[in-house]
Amino acid sequence: MKAEPVEASMDATPRKRTSREISVVDLFLRILGVIGTLGSAMAMGTTSQTLSFFPQATQIRATYDDLPTFMFFVIANSVACGYLFLSLPLSIVSIVRSSAKIARVFLVVLDTVMMSLLTAGASASAAVVFLAHEGNNKANWSPICQQFDSFCERLSGCLIGSFVTVIMFIPLVIISAVVLSRS
Image (cartoon, one colour):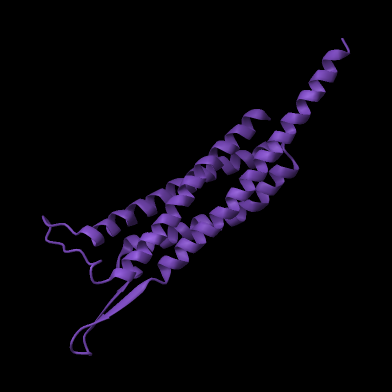
């Protein structure tokens, strides 16, 4: 009979260690997410290009705030960045106290909401960037990226950063669910 409690105590230690290791990965992904969303929001928010035509008085300027979709992209990435930054203490609490279920439930719900917000902002912006690159002959929209090449390249880079962060939210949700199921 004494052998069973020893086995039970031995099983609990690796389980707690694994939960802590998973929580450390969670913290690392959150830090990377802060960097990704902050970089995407800042890069998009400072994107502009000016073209001059033959008479020097004629200049055309393209900025991110010309389209509400790009403004939504900046807001969505900023909100997600703020959330990820504010969730860092909860992630640290999960490392220190692996039995903190309320923090994990809070994180899994808000991670899912933020992943949805980022997906919406990045997807809508990707549609506009696609139109900027390809145009639409049926709607008589010509592609503008032939003229505003650095503007479009920067927009595409912002989208890549945001979609990478969306992909990083998937393991964050899974990690929180796994840790909840183990506790």
